[in-house]
Amino acid sequence: MASPRSFAISNSRGSWHAIAIGALLWLAFPATNAVADEVSTGVFYRQDSDTTLVVSPRVAAAKYLQDKMTRVDVAYTADIWTSASIDIRTAATAAVTEQRNQVTGAVSHEFARTTVAANYYFSNENDYVANGAGLSLVQRLAGGNATLEERLNFGFDRVGRSGDPTFSRDLRTLGGRLAYTQNINSTTVLQGAYELIYREGYQASPYRFVGLGGDGLCGGSAVLCVPEVHPDTRMRHAMVLDGRHSVSEDSSLGVGYRFYIDDWGVLSHTGIVQFAVVFGEESSFTFRYRFYTQGQASFYQPVYGVPGPTGFDFVSRDRELSSLFSNRGALAYDTLFELGESGTTLRAAIAAGLTVFTYNNFVGLDNVYSGDLTFALTLEL
Figure 1 (tube, rainbow, N blue to C red):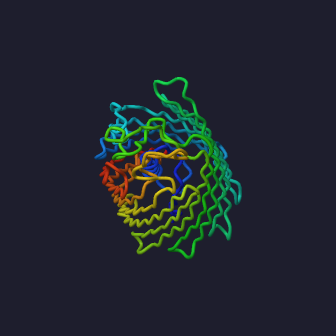
Figure 2: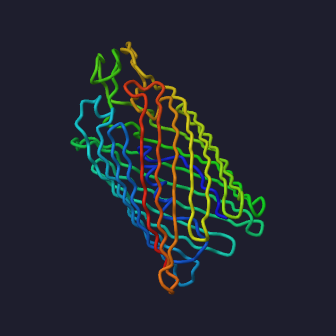
Figure 3: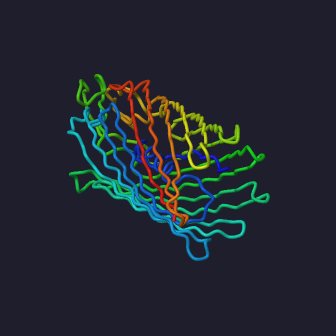
């Protein structure tokens, strides 16, 4: 039985990045204990009611070296998005179309009881360049019935602003994760994890502007419109507990909880339920539900008044710093085909999801409805 999938603190510039990458990984790389080379491709499509469209294709390959203990992975992902969201409309800016390209490489080696891995990624778009690397160590304990994972991540981003060659800001990230997984018995597995991320540098958006006074909207009756300003440092903590239990020979139930807090005053809770049914030996159907709720950042205000002599230290129009909650449901189906007698297999997977975001105190936006579709193929050689 595969280990339960854990939640992670997102490093992306928008929540849809995390959804896209997570959906592609969920489908394009199904859990397997087989040692085989793989070639995979997938595409993620998302459309929401805030006039944002995202298409994310991905191709990847995995190769085991001759000793079958060393694995090399390479992947390419593109995020192509078009948006005229409320952030853009209230700044009196025309609709934006951009593309982000990311290349990732990883290598891992399995020793008798330990697996060591390293990875690097580079992504680029017209106003943002990101570099990141990670190191991880997974130790198998108690005769293989438990694992301990330690992970360290580094990131260095360069933030620009389209049309302004003089605008350049740095953002540095250091993160770590410690996770322990235990097989309780032959049908139940539990995992606990702690994640820490420290970010230093520019963490606002160069395209968001905050209206002061009036209705708080730059395109409305605001008296003054100023660039968004966020603190330069942020410490983020997340504690996760996941579990999965085999209900019968062909079905399993997974549940998870994540608690998050940071020094910007944001506190959130996430709950997840996942039910999977296996048909025969080669196909499965999965239902997944996720609930998320958070409070607002300490410096966030729906409407900022006209500042006095001292002004404001920080101002924000980031909806992800407001008070909000969301509900997401997703259905996935995957199946495996044998290709001839060579042992080569093809796994096809498709998933569809619907998410409803509700903003409690974000001026100009109450709800966003988002639908997404993911399709993936994995060729196991």
